Amino acid sequence: MTPEGRLATTVDLLEEIVRQNRPADVVAGAYLKARRYIGAKDRRAISDRLWGVLRRKARVEWILSVCGRPATPRLRVLADLILVDRMTPEAVSALCKGGARGLEPLSSEDWALLTQLKGRELFHHEMPAWVRGEYPQWIEPRLTAVLGDRLTAEMGAMRDEAPVDLRVNRLKADRETVQAALAAEGLVAQPTPYSPLGLRLPARIALSAQGAFRDGMVEVQDEGSQLLALLADARPGQSVVDFCAGAGGKTLVLAAAMENKGRLVACDVNERRAEQSTLRLRRAGVHNVSRRLLESETDKWVKRHAGTFDRVLVDAPCSGTGTWRRNPDAKWRLTPDSVDHLVGLQASILASAARLTRPGGRLVYATCSLLAEENERQVEAFLAAQGAQFRTIPVPEVWATTVGGDCPVPGPWLRLFPERHHTDGFFAAIFERT
Image (tube, rainbow, N blue to C red; front, side, top):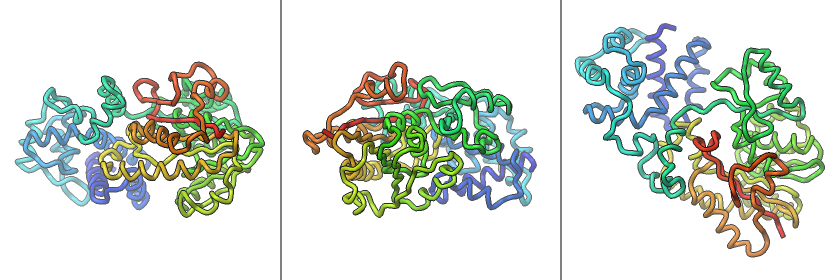
């Protein structure tokens, strides 16, 4: 594929994302799957450009607005070439040749715009904070309430692409063995600072091509997500439920911690997500997991199994504000109404899942959100409603035995941030049924 063909494909794909208003990775995956003629190198170049444009959405659109031009996908990509790649208008014009698989030639208005953008910086002192930080304006007060004077630094970290975190599968290997296996394939991975299971790569790779992945020794998982699953303190022989299991990332951590011994139930309301976990479980060598498809968080199954589980992990559906490094498009689909809906759903899920916890058992509530209403306020309301049925276990107490080393937060809850801890944004609270 020619450079101009890659560029035209990027614009076409960006138009699809805007039109469908669905997660960019879902749209891009379907788009590229339907176009088998696009080779691996071309896919990588197109993806790099696409995700870069998505990460710079607010700033580029602000600059286009100042220049009096609409923020169409085509102009966003052309502006990106000037502002980020520092190309000249002449070089950009050479990429716009028209034809069946090329961008249409520059108009006089396009040429005037690119000339105006030449030499301009991506940041400007007149940009509002939310534009510089690449987040919706409406959410700024909510983020400020949590981050305070660290808002600029944390949102700056959220703008950048996250490294690739891997989790070692202890059912098949230890961290040193996997690190050596990756090194033999030319990949230099460093141990993560907190998770004893984690290895970190500096950039994205095609992990499916690596032997360590195919053999089930390693999976992609952010270090923060690994820590949440470890804090559940699942042990061999216990009865454990992953109540919002999704595609099974945390289920795999729980199974390895249990050494494949005991009963582990992975619940979810989405059949497609549940089915995605099948291959992962098989590849990892996990055989103590049973999957349970629920009609809702109040499914009759919950009532029938009340008080029977030693550990209950609730990784609740949330705004995903802690994952913007990996999903830069998600922030622009979020609305105040959708957050309010999620807060209500989280409260219902937590109250229902809590019924599964046996006396003396533990309940872990977790999100990948930065917002207080999904985190501290949610668990405070839960404790107020539960009376004396649950007590809080400070995270540092559990950290010492499950993760090891010094806990990076004083407690009682776990709060992880991208700039401070170099993970995605996560929250966790641990309770014991009295």
